[in-house]
Length: 257
Ligand SMILES: [Fe+2]
Ligand SMILES: [Fe+2]
Image (cartoon, rainbow, N blue to C red):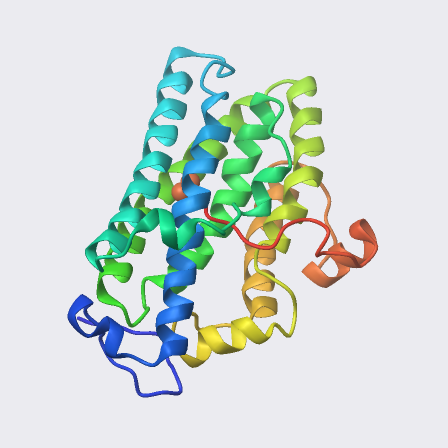
């Protein structure tokens, strides 16, 4: 059954055949999201690749390698969406930078595990909106990607659980939380974003950046405080004020996962 985000335009299901007959703003915003993923999924895969040999066991090496493989797959999957529209993907993405999320280096195995548990989770939250977008092939690509993102988040959660068994590992996890939670929170974008308003207008998203950020924060706060033993303020706003001096935009703007 087709379930789309609420939108204010009455736009229904869009197929490749009628993609370019849509309003210019819709096609532009949709192509922009696809282009961001084409660039960032490959960059993310390159970044993750170094973590394979950092994994402590063969089992974890294999799971990390699978994650890297799937991230390259995400790049190819979003690239195909452009190719299917007869667009030159290199041309479309040539002025697109990768997501700033990946500008903070992943230095250790603990870093990689907390990244997957927190930042890939933030990406999954975005994909939950994208799977209800009007453009049918995009919706399908996002659903396939989301299924794999849940696996990446699961690997992160398992990796952290192993680390929590020793005091040193516990300390590393606590340090990585303070590194990646700001990135996860920032990935939802600025408050009162005009772009988010347009994404909602066209049914590409169904919640405000602040709304998505708070939902995400409450979810991660529950296990970070109870299971990981790291105390956190009540709300995302309080975290941003107390830990980041109110400055969220210094961290990241968007996440591909
Ligand atoms: Fe991804
Ligand atoms: Fe991922």
